Image (spheres, helix red, strand yellow):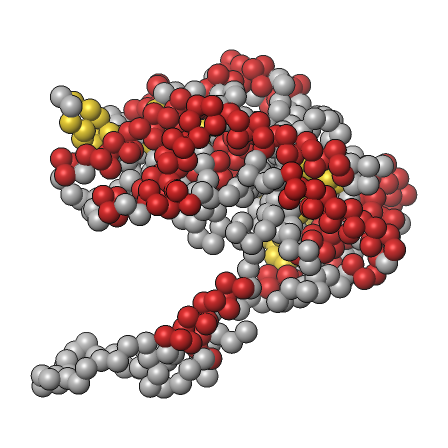
Length: 127
Length: 476
């Protein structure tokens, strides 16, 4: 399992890649995709929708369950990765390439973890 | 196996029609442009087709079926006998009431008995299944708030261990969902609930015993917190089998409930049922009930719509013959048998749990109710044998797998509900199988990924089934 050092992570298992101060890509972590199992469906927001830090903005369905995906930041959806709608398996195959949404005008973000902190966090959670 | 369309050939049929002795006429219009694709099979082939289909599945009549939260109890044959009586089958819902007094009496008596068992004041038998009942019950809650002009209540609180249908039903009714986490003991986190309730709370949806098989000891405090905030409390009857005739949701403070007759009251479950999800409520909500209510006047029964009814949620009186089966079950068990069944369900679950917990860690190591949840996270981590692998291995021993990967708050969960209708001998056999699978897994973990090996079909490709489902036969 890999967790690139240049990304930030949320406790609800999303990664955030800041492009600049107020713009970021958001996706599911390697740990999240592994725990969920094979993803078969994703329900994404629309361009222009507002997202709020700590609130659900999408849901993903695996063979095990349907799970909410939470936004680690507050802002506006600038772009949606529509490729995932037809190919949800990309989130399993390449979790850091398969971003879900691009958020702009970020006004707020929740407490984010570094890769090292994130690994420590989920290992504690498991134990 | 071959599908029905792949069997037989043109010209084969189940009946031989006599030669036509009148002139043949072809209707001008509307004329079908293409010939219908109908199977051409003899009666013999048709019979074999269904027998073969029957061999591909596993039902309560085939063997142990401990599917947690689904209460796959045995369906007594006497239920079928009662439901097949001509007085119940040769009737039409639009017949004048005076010609179907017996049927209305069934509706009335069943409602009264279910009210007595649950501590409710009124009941509708119209909803067709559990989630349909949830939807109906939430409509009552919504109607109540709206009737008081209290329109700011837009949120339904749901614990994180809830059945997925709870938030789904609340969303269907137009409510927003507030998810609250469970405490470490699997019960409702009282402090989190206090923080969540307020002027926007329409209600709380809860099942007790809860989804991890534990009776929430704080239930009176929970319902009063919601009531004090002005909300109502909804009881999901999925787990009523653990407590029926022992404690009543109405006495715990619940305002609305749904029941699953196909779980708790021994009517067929799965394979299309059909189900039945009666909704009960306290008297102040009875005015909103859907459908028609039986009313007795001068010794005659008639059917009347409640004053402020939400309308109908299903045609006529719901799945009437299912109600007949449930009534038969209640009358057969009687007031001693109903609690005895519940207690035996709890005993069976605790027996199995205690015979397995030395090798299969329990998510909550405490006295359970009618079901228990195993957590196979360690096994998955240590030898890469998952809950799914164990479930698939059970199939090779003629046991239906427990519920897998639910509740979501327990990782690698297997949720086992033996039900009261299994004997100690059956439980002992199942325990031996679980233990054998554990030993096999330790000895040869890789082989577990191949299970099942003795079933008509091997491990199915669930991912492909979800991503690229084939839902109908395509003709060449």
